[in-house]
Amino acid sequence: MAVGKSVIGAELARVLGVDFIDTDQRIVAKHGPIPRIFGARGEHHFRQLEARAVADVLDTDKPKPVVLSLGGGAVLDTGTQQLLGRATVVFLQATVETVRERIVRNTGRPLLAGDPVKAWMRLAAVRIPVYSRLADITLDVSNSSVPELVAELIAMLDAEQRKENTAP
Image (cartoon, rainbow, N blue to C red):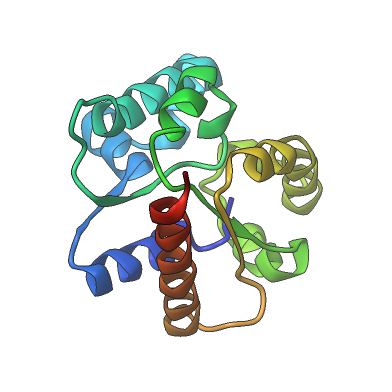
């Protein structure tokens, strides 16, 4: 959460010439603001909407190349985890120091109510092992600009593609 998935993902998609899909944006467009969904129907309902948004993109015989940005908790769904096995998964890794300013000023994140830094650290402790297990590529976003991160990510994606093409 707050690591720059949407900004980095959109720029990566632009440079690669593919579509950018943000599952949170799709959910908002179809169901309304995320805080309202959480308030009216709860996190479980939101996670169901999120899993469907991911499946709409990845659960196809011939998925087209896209950059797909998932909400931070999306990977906790086992069905989503299985679908991600068909994709190249990038984990954008950040420290709490990197995201502190963003999470403190952004009050639209229902899971960060109260003490946002403490909540972020609690969520990260649960999620990071899942992210690490699912990731084909891990990119530290702490100390670089978006253009630098996108260039580094493209090089890592190229290396991953070469590795897949030479696997027995």
